[in-house]
Image (cartoon, rainbow, N blue to C red; front, side):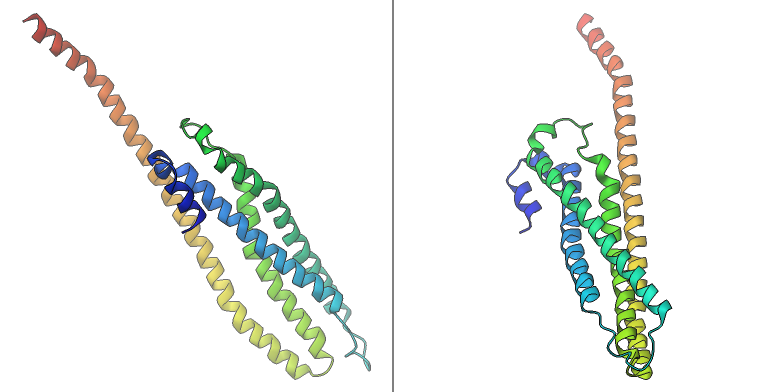
Length: 223
């Protein structure tokens, strides 16, 4: 059983039916995945930078353009993952604290805790799992070309072709996944707005009908 299911099962029905609490647990799982992914990939990238050797280029000078691309991609990769890691490390403790204090704000329907951090959470998750993984594949291709190209150009070409064969499904899945997530969020917001509209209409009809019912009861009492 997950932490969200265990927490909600120990609470009342109001906690189980409150969508705000489920949204907080959803964002918490996103930040936890950002923590793990960004820490792992930034560590790999730093090790790759430290361990990079140009010993294969003994008889020829390495391509300056290739090295410049490698340095730029490596800097972007480490910087992006560290930025996502910083966002998750700052927001995640606050999110856990708000979840533990759900009894305080649960009764207020207009209260939406940490709603201002929604954009930060989405940016951290997209950067870590989307752009960060793409840059990691790009850096892997550059490392293969730099390390192997000094010995055998044919082997380097085959390595890049193999990496492209893996990267194309990765890109297609990522784009399709983010499109489906965006459509799902739009549908959920539309459903929520329709529910609010129906509730407002129902309350308006109830307010209009209540004086009629009250007057009829008064006539019955008079008669």
